[in-house]
Every structure is written in structure tokens, then in C-alpha cells.
Image (cartoon, rainbow, N blue to C red; front, side):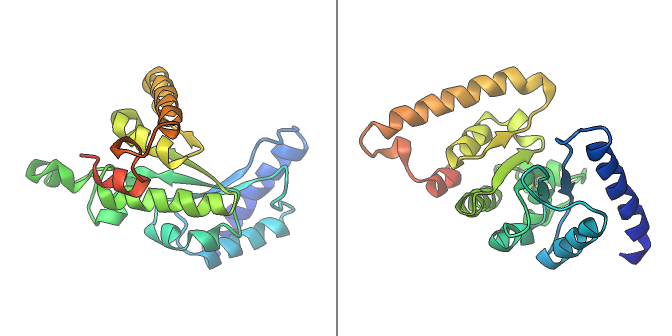
Length: 206
């Protein structure tokens, strides 16, 4: 939006100053709530005008919160180095529910559930497409901290990193290590129900 362009330019100048004058080269950019590739392309053009250009030491990431990012993942991969899945918003927008509603949970807790098969299929699809284009995928949100089975699903899908609440870090690390060991064992065993395809696995999470 033209009315917010000056503020965005100011933010870009601040990032450039931090990187160039303070030497903090690990400061990158992540765009929230992206909806369309053309929108991201316009933002990248403004960045270039302010002297910030995507390259080896300057990554550009995008939040995967809107289903259109999932559907057009191959197009978004042309512009970014990574996706960060915002599982709360992705669940809300995929299922068409208000996550802050006080009514829906009282009717049925499944109305808002990050383990819903539709959400899991979306996540699995994004990881698959992104990795084909050598683009990183991470996840943030409540889900991995609350549901161990969701963390296992993400590891099996090959997600690159998982963000959890501070109080869940130790248990999450142990769980990820356990799942990775299980996958290694399954890879040496004959094909069975225990190593069925990821998409099938997604549909069997309660």
C-alpha cells in the first residue's frame, strides 16, 4: 500500500544500517502474511531500491500462513530462501474458522485443530515442493509444543527446523531424536505399516 511505503523503506534502511555499520550479517528479512507472488515481487523491488538484495549472505523468507502460499509454493520458491509455516493462522484460514472463537471449542474441539488432515496435507505439500527447489522450511506456532504426534509428522515430512515454546525445548529435542532413530530403523526394515507413505500417515493422526 502506498500509504505504508515510507514506513517500509524506513525499516529497510534500518536493516541495512544494522548489517553494514554494525556488522550483523545474520539479520535477514521475513515477510509476514504473504498472499501472492506479485506482492512479494513488489516488496523485493523496494528492497533493491534501498540497497538490500537477496544473495548468499542476505536471505529472504516468507511466512506460510495463507493457503495461496501452499498452492503456489513453486512460484514463491523463485523469490525466497525459506518458508516459515505459521501453523495457527494456516489452520484458521485452511479450515475457515476463528481461532479466537469461544463458541466453536464448546461445540467440538476439532473445529480448530492443527492436526486436521487438510492442514497436514498442506504442510506436507509445502515441504515437498520447497525441497524440490532447495528452499528451507521451518514451522512456528503452538502445535509442535502441544502435540508430539504433530512433531513426529513434521520430522517424517523432512522439515528443516521446528520452533517450540521454551518450556518444550528439551522434550521436543528428545522427541525429534527418537523419531529420527525410528525412521533410520524403518529404512532398514521391509515395507510395512510402520513406514507407510507420509500422506497416508497424515490421515491417521487422530
